[in-house]
Length: 316
Ligand code: UDP
Image 1 (cartoon, protein in one colour):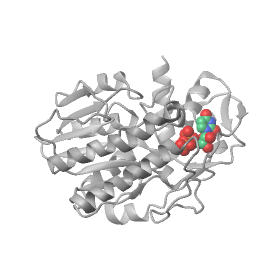
Image 2: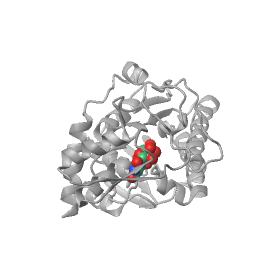
Image 3: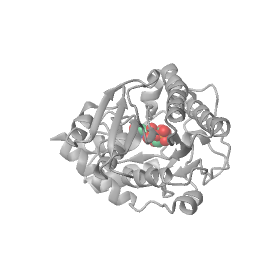
């Protein structure tokens, strides 16, 4: 990227958005962050404000954004992604996925610039195959409590593909699998931050169901690298591409690992499994490796160590 390039990051005050903005700013480009602070945080904005080429605009993507004369790239990361957060106001979640993405696609069309859409492994729902390749069409309940997010993101993908086919907008779709790392909010509600916060406080760790469900956890720096690689692909490569770490673990094993890495004496407490909670999730990253030359490099143990350090420090 050239130094005078302007990159718009919608959702730049959130967990992934913060890390992406920081990486772009370190490369010297102008970053304009749009965020309505629904789940994004002013703490993240404050950290980014130290960079001279950073600008924050308090804006909800449900409204069209007209504040810039020139945009070189758009990243759409704007949507609550933690189940308790996206389920708090599910109608707003669907609107953000659909109307928000539509507004940003129109902006990309107007500026003739590429747009990267943060989609999700949730488009696979409670997958019937493992690992999940991009060619798997998913098994999503259209009327469940997760559907606002799952179906919202599926609809956003089709908007991207139709903007590409109908208007030749340069769209880039990535399906992001479970991601963790420093700067997750203490109250984020997803499993890694919940477990670390509980372990450090010596509180019981809340395992939903019997802990046999699996997820594959990717460290945030690996994801940011993948996002930049995807943005750098040729115009005719739209994806979707899976970005995830194929190292699959059960939730109970994750809890035990966090106990041992943090030196905690926490116990486990079993709580009911939320409905439609996918049983297993593991990305097939063959396409990312082939098209982006990308694969994750941070092990779960190393990534958790860094994340535990962050939360330990945050607590003080
Ligand atoms: N989970 C858990 N305890 C928690 C939070 C989550 O056992 O405190 C489980 C959840 O039921 C799911 C997995 O951990 O099976 C991952 O949940 P998360 O909310 O992090 O992300 P998801 O992949 O479900 O969107």
